Length: 268
Image (tube, rainbow, N blue to C red; front, side, top):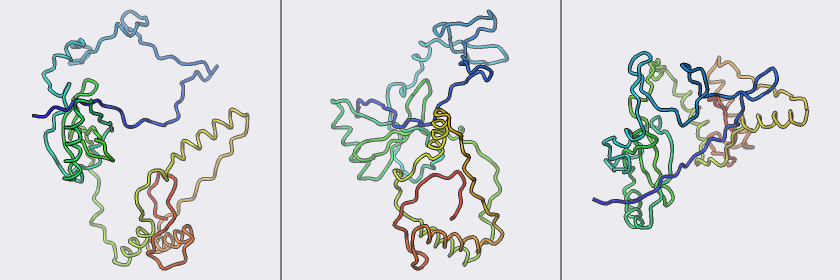
């Protein structure tokens, strides 16, 4: 048994533009109150307890010490239970990323675990309790550190009965043109080349309003209806050549990095 003291740090943060809720009539701030319906009054945070509704308006109240009494090793320990190949984990299971940092006394075993995961090319599966919930998690090496990513449990994944499309007939010529387009846009993943254009556009509008300027609405790009798939694919290939400043044969990979983020999946 090897024990490695570690600390857990959040690895991501949201960059969404935040808004306050205002009363439309006078732009005054709308407050969300902790309101007791029985006593018809606002109550302080320290008087709030957590209750599980087992029947309509019937609750079992849990105190903080009840959560501490849970017979779970994962409350204070990340127990490694299995080692798997990362490509066996469907991306739909990934939830939130954390950094693991060892205490000084755990440096050597932590480094050993990191090196072993790197050499074997594996990800370790474990369970850990975070914010009163036991989470399935995956731990993997990344640039000299170990990342912990919480995973959804299978019953948390929503399944939808979608019509399969893998039985639709596609011609060899259509496949070749599609391959050509993909190869022209194929490149190493470089997240620094992408940015949140929606957020930038939103801040532009906010800045304009602050300065009393008129907000000019940008024209929405027209989305052509696909009537002839082959014609659309060929047009996409030609448009990609022009965008890359290329006049070479189809299939040449571009040197320009793609930029921006689109909300619709579109070729060309």
